Image (cartoon, rainbow, N blue to C red):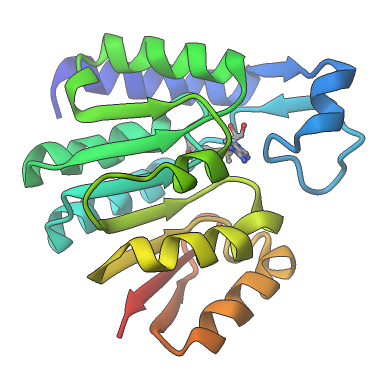
Length: 210
Ligand SMILES: C[S@@+](CC[C@H](N)C(=O)[O-])C[C@H]1O[C@@H](n2cnc3c(N)ncnc32)[C@H](O)[C@@H]1O
């Protein structure tokens, strides 16, 4: 990892503990922005993945040779920067989506500071819009870290967009297991994936295409 990347990652790790943003009443009503436990709560945080999860993301990109990588939920770009490090090795590209303007501004700043803009496309819109407009190659690796109640709908959209041997990685598979259940049931019912839950950090579900 070069010094620029190391500095930006350390900056986001520091920011992760103290950054917060107060939603307007209108924003709070119209979107979850990843809030799950209490939709009355108007404060959102960065909710970046822990470093170990980032290292795993990078490693899985490299090990699988993934080139077309899609992330749902960019926040300030922390997990994205780990995915990008993998994409630089595989010759791939990372597509990500974030809807909250304050976080889009942060992520854009971080991608510039790390000088990785050519490896990343940040869609500044709702995830469903990104999926509906998808015109890139089949997805090799998908990282899901966004609004969990909508995962079953995302899965319906994404499944046909996946490459034959695609890998899906899902954060919060242990910490938010209850909220995740409808999604996991849908994945099981498809009979197309082998699921392994790694009890690391927030819990990472690996969904491997059969
Ligand atoms: C847990 S955070 C992502 C953290 C990020 N993966 C990281 O580790 O640095 C979830 C993010 O998804 C965004 N989000 C939630 N639902 C979304 C949606 N439907 N469309 C776009 N972004 C969404 C939220 O605003 C939030 O920033």
